[in-house]
Image 1: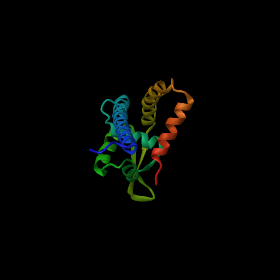
Image 2 (image 1 turned 90 degrees about the vertical axis):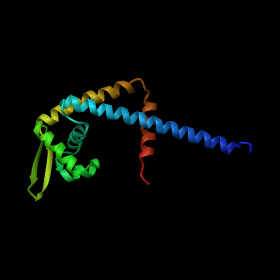
Image 3 (image 1 turned 60 degrees about the vertical axis):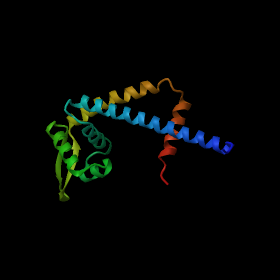
Image 4 (image 1 turned 180 degrees about the vertical axis):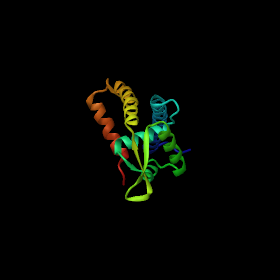
Length: 154
C-alpha cells in the first residue's frame, strides 16, 4: 500500500470541497425554485413558476417576440405557448401580431401584470435582503465577485 503524499491530501481536500460546493448549489437551486413557486402563487393562485419567469423576462426586457422568450428561457415552444395563453386569460400578458412580420407574436405585460409582478417580486426581494442584511459589505462583495468569477464564460 502506497503512503499518501501531500498531493493526495490536496486532491482529497479539493474533491471534498467541490462536493460541498455542489451540495450548496443544489440547496440554493431548491430554495430558488420554492421562492419562484411562492412568488407565482402571490401573483395568482393558478400561476405556475414558468408563468412567473415569463413575467420576469417581460418585466426586465419589455415587449419582445415570443420566440425570443423561448430562446431566453430554453423552454419548449408549445409549453411557452400554453403558459402565455394562461397569462393572457389571467389578464397579465397581452400577445399581439408583430406589425413588421405577421408571422411573429409579440408579448408584453399588461398594467395588471406589471403591478402584480412588482408586488410579488418586491416580497421575494425583501426576503433575500433580510437574509443578507447581517452580512458585511465585504462579504457581499466577496459573494458577488465569486459568483461573477464562476459565471465568466471562456
